[in-house]
Length: 302
Image 1 (spheres, helix red, strand yellow):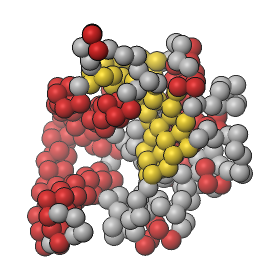
Image 2 (image 1 turned 45 degrees about the vertical axis):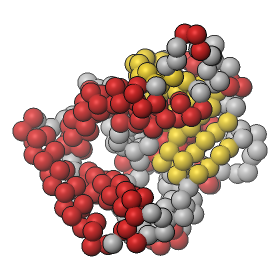
Image 3 (image 1 turned 60 degrees about the vertical axis):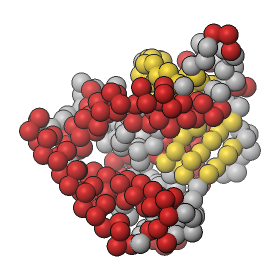
């Protein structure tokens, strides 16, 4: 399920959606046309790697910049169109490239996707563990299917079963809706027999921030901590008041005006429930944690 499929989420009409998608295409083309003028092939790596990195960065930046300026109804409709495209393209792609099957599931009322390795019966081995993955999107966008290629790569590389949860997003469902969804899925996985000692919670961007909020909620729900927490470029300081926000604004793929108000919905950004950097030091709150972030990211100092 994508947000636009929820009965209480408003979307744009078909003609408006078509215009929105065309506008996105124009934004991508215009952005890519500017790439050669930056001479990206002169970077530190090979010309191919440098160019590929520059193209990827520009595509994401153009998409984010265009999307952030849309009314929420148009954004949801465009998101649904992209999700449908991914639903057709991604399953056969990850099966061929990663040897991973994608299947739908609903856990504790929260839909999502499983990414599991496909192996011949003679070579089949049990998964080494389970990863509950909370996708990025700044708490307001994307879907599990849009993350299926990354999740499939994660499943292949770790030999774990990966569940990407379709948690509720802002502004329709601000904090703490997404955290409650994540906690419900986490509890239900344990009820299904997943051993907490082999259960990993992971997330990126807003999903990484959500993962830290989940850690704070586990004691309230009398739930055990997972075996590990993995955070990729996490958005864990919604105060957005640190040097890297301005210093890296021109280099990051994200737009400079990162939207956090729709998610907070009146909650103060310094609240430790939404910004883990403001939480008091408590080693028992977090399991062994791996954090990965780039030097050019706006969230680096957070």
